[in-house]
Image (cartoon, rainbow, N blue to C red):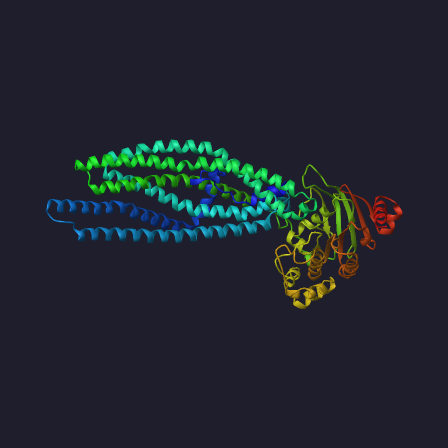
Length: 617
């Protein structure tokens, strides 16, 4: 369920039907989001003033064109009339002058439109660049519990889809809104200058067109919602079936999968057909009403021309203006929808940027340097829960001496991994204290504490890059020779040399071009190269075979010598030589001691060990 939700969050919202009549995601706090967005935009106020000037200028020059073209039509008509009456002919010189003026106007309009587009695109991309930088920086400043409450897909959607939606909407809506308003006012003025009576006739048709469009939108809206939901289901099924194709084949569920897909696809077909058909009626309705307007304008214009109130060319100009008059109205409606989507995307971005950040700095700073610590660790009545109402570690106390190898065992959910996360200050305690060399960890900056630990997790993490770069991530200033030595210590050198390219082999984004065990060896080599004073090994050898595990265990013994190490393990055979074993159950340490002592106690640890021994046997 969570995976499906993540997939749907990654998909960009799209508006169905012509004229963007589909459902639009709306911001909950439109004014607040707009205010924050204006703060970003206001940094480029000079550029925006240029955009307004050039957009308005381009629109004005474009609007004047039909009026001048009407003058040319009038000149041709008058010339023909003079020729019929035998009083002269067409003045082509005058017509050339009129057409040249119109050409210059259109060229200036095009140049201004190009300049405003260039300036606005620059502004929008700078805002996009700034937002993505802020989000990327914010990701590193957020506390770990944020990612417990939000899926990675949701965060990914904000930095990709939402920023794209915001910038595209901003780029289109600002210039289109300015252009539409200027066009609407300009055309209305030009129409009134030709004939107020004809303008009144044209304006009377707008309510008729508006009522028709609103009726169509009202009936198509529910089908668009259904279409979007069905589309999400179809995409989710396709992704799941492709991703789990082997499992589908294994359990021979092809017929069942196809049946479910056909049912969902049929629902999508029904809703899409109805939504597209109903919304498609909008254009014919507007064309029909527009044609009625042309008929009325031509009849009335012809009458006024005969009476000598207007010229013949004015009829042509007015028809062009009537045709253009509905376009800015449609554009304003589109901008309204686009603005809603833009603000919804902006709101999601700003909610993320406003999330409370992790406090990295210590309130009271110690004079001791974290690099100089010996490695004594003390847990004093530690109490913690990811949710304050559900405490996992209830009253945890333990003493760890410098250089000791501490194993933490227990059933799933006992709090083993949680304990090491608290040690690295990924989370703050609900109660109790943790001390390093007798100094409260709160007196160190969190970054200092984390920098003191080397860590190998059960879930390997490798990035797209060469094997050399992935190992060097443990210590960026390491030489190639040091990287190779770390790989040899982790028993990874042999398999690396057999790969095409060796240490320069490029890992893909998911690191699927090496095996799971090989990935684990690379992360172990990275930890060896980091050479930290404190070590955490969370099921570090769980993904390798038994023979390799023995070799890695020897490498780990060399690595852990002289260092305080915490080992989380399920295979108890791997931690028999630990200096101290902490046995956890339901958030409490119920037993502690070395392997022999715990077996002699014949308690919970002994039961776990015998059960694994019997399973192995």
